[in-house]
Length: 267
Image (cartoon, rainbow, N blue to C red; front, top):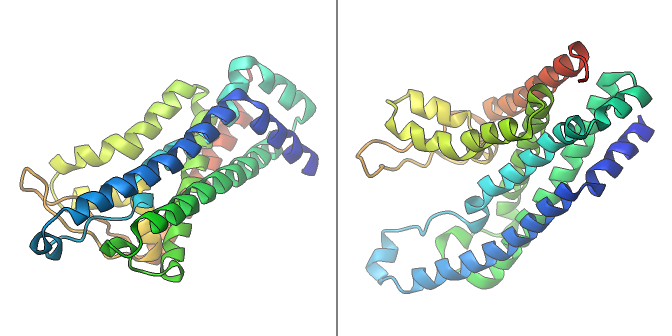
């Protein structure tokens, strides 16, 4: 298993797509710093009365969460689809005929790689935002110790999405198709939910990747009203329910991947 994991790690860090993803992750950190500067500047230009009735929104790390999740998902997708596209998967399975072992190694490498990337982006963005904003906005008033569980949940949600991407890549064998599904789940679905009736939209929203960090750490539902007058979807799961759901996503993704690579021939 150690040799297989080493081989998968070598493949992950040597392919060009990984370098592009790392580059985008670095840009996210810079973008987070610029966004923090823009937000605190706009906040200080508001009148005292307006600021008293406004929280200023969430932190910058929350704003870039969906982009981090998409990057993690793409890492997972490409772990399988890049090998199917080049034919390298034949050599992989020839060297290691026990396909579940390959899956476990890929899952370990994808999880570790996405966790490392997400942790660096989240905590770097947090540190830069704290330096820029300080305690001038309500969202940045809690201390690092208070924020730590939520920051860890942000990074953890990226790992969950990366393993979801791994499963989609193994099942579909198409990077385009798998990434499109991730885009729908991460970006598009929550906009469509605005037009659905309650409580359906709240329950469906609770199952989306973007809602995981709040639910994993017990953040109270963020109720608001959409421009069309309907309620904005909010979270519904308890902390144990959210953890169980996150584990279920990982198990279902890896189970689907195991079924796909075990029962289908390599073409």
